[in-house]
Amino acid sequence: MKKRYTEKSMDWKRKFARTILERGKYYYVHKYVQGLRYKDYIYKAQVIGSYIYQVEIKIRNQEPEYMMCSCPHAQKGNYCKHMAAVMYAIEDAGGMEQQMKLNMLEKKVKPFEKRDDVYRYFDVGRIAGDLEVTESAIEEAKKMIDNLQVGIDEVKMGYSRTYQGSIKVAVVQGYFIENKARRNMTCVFDRNSINRMECSVLGCYHYYYGSYGSDNIDICKHQLALLFMIDEYLKKYNPGDTTDHVADVFLHRFRSHQNRKNRENTIETVNDFHIEPTFEKAGNELALSLKAGTEKLYVVKNIKEFVQLYEAGESIAFGSKTQVNLAKHRISCESEKIYDFVKKIIKEEESRERHARESYRYYYESEGIKQKISLYGKRLDVFFDLYEGCTVAANSKSRGKSSKTTYLFKEGKPNFSLKITKDVDEEQIFHGIHVSGKVPDFILGEQYRYYFTQDAFCRVGEETAKKILPLMELAEYGDISFTVGRKNCM
Image (cartoon, rainbow, N blue to C red; front, side):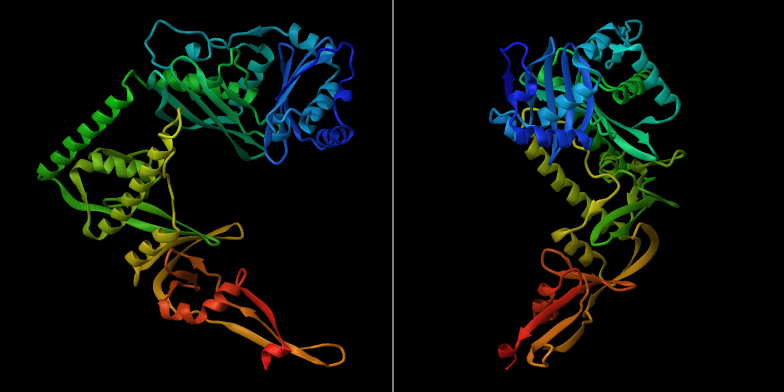
């Protein structure tokens, strides 16, 4: 929604209903307005409501020229409480006209320069060539880097689909440390421009979407610091080239075929590569992680990548020093069942992601399954079948504390503790009975229900489930409480 003003010397509050103004002031006073910033007469901010709403207001000569908000109320052509909240914030920022003059007087420079002395497919000087920021913002960003507040978790290559075909993009997952808490940041860019930047730092919540055709790059100080980190990363590793999506798929399949063929024909190949599952339990949230290796087992940090490398017969790194050439090793017989289980889940996820990508004009390579695979529904049923009668290592989290344990996977008959009391009033008139008690907190698979004991993970058999189903359905977080009236007791 976009509202334009034609009247001169008008009080902006007159455009808003009284109740909208009151709600907007409440939002402003309670600090729901985040990341207020100014450039070329335009103020932008995020307002935290049911969702995070983007607000943009252009002001000239102390009068709003237009207001925009992404909320549903504004999309219908209304002036909303989020616009009013931002207007209150602008007024308290030191006055509209004075604030604009201060911003225009502050010197701005280009923090990155394009380099032609060495070939780089990705170059921040090209990607952010139009970026202009204040010198004070550069100083703040570099101070964050010096204080180790900003870093990069992961850099991945992917492709973005446009009407001209697919182009290579880099997806950078970064972070900002604030009061010992990590706040996520994301930057997606192709060779020529920034497509998207997101910052989730408290009080900032800054988003930039270059793919929407914005002429000016508008980023916050945290994102600027991340760009400096990306610049260093690109100079050090020089990732990316002009290989397109089709060629990338072809080369990967070709290398995989050759490596599998070499592994089958190599006499050094031995069945000594082991994989062990770890059952992850956090309340009723269940997941699977893996350990793998030859003589020593290491935690697999990216399960999807591990499967891809094994299928291709390439090397995998464990820790900072250990490299295992998977072309010279085969998975041991006892490890095949868990590997096949994981491989099937990954193929299902890839198929689902591929279908989702084909429904959109733009897409980015999926983050995929990393260190854990969630267990639910049919997955949980199949996993139990694989390890029924076996003891599985487990990491259990409860009330913020972690502990290592083991669980025996077995069929079980849950114990119930029920208490039946008379329901009588003050005059000792009998009205019925009250039933209360505890039952195990059941976890649902697709066909079965499960519960934990102190040292076992138990499945409820079909016959047992039929008998106790009414009580299982009544239970809420393991508690049962209901009253049967006098007539129904007869």
